[in-house]
Image 1: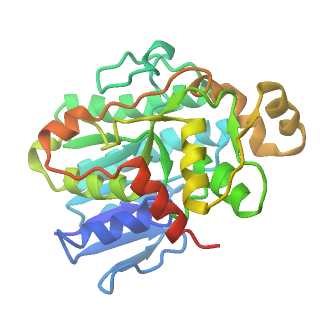
Image 2: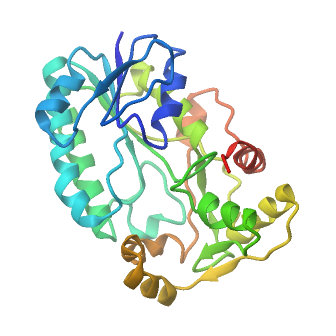
Length: 309
């Protein structure tokens, strides 16, 4: 049973490929320049901005995992995400493949952020969130129409070894490693959930290979004992034998940085996730599956030990 990862070179892709080897040896890795994770992996170079190549990449697959990560820029998302989702859905329908879409929480309403569940209100407060809502709606519309079997696996913000997209890794670990002060966005005294990337990958593989998990939304397993930014920094300090307090980055500084660093222009609209508590509830998954979710203490320790310097 061929299982295909679209976006195999991303943060989750390589870890997911390892986890899928528990279920099948027939794994296809699709990206511009895919690299083997398991000995038996099939490498399938493709430009996923081309619907014809998406269709070829999906042909012959039983399960497809959509993990593509586009440049973190609204104009890119607005142009590329709906087109890729439409091409993926059409190809899955044509080839009778199940679809697992790895999603984030950007489509949830402001009032949902302090306690997000799969049933939280959908009302994205950002332009990027509007794109995520659009593509999730496309998927669920085809599911409700009975055209295909699909599920959405949602994750909180990431952390984990070698995760270049993680605030924990980029602003805390790497700064402490360089002898600098760790940084945190807006307010270090608010609790903020993070999903451990190895857990996210393992759970995504499990969901994809569970027949009754389809046609619904799942929050991926996340330690319910969420921590504040200051508490996270304390844990890193303890493990790294350092003693530096976090430097809080205010909104005005983000806006100034955006004048000089293009990607920083994309951050201010997302800062509503850091000016209030942010709790990601994965109890639906926890109640359905026997799964050992990594604690923040263990996850931070493993992140430090396994991150390449």
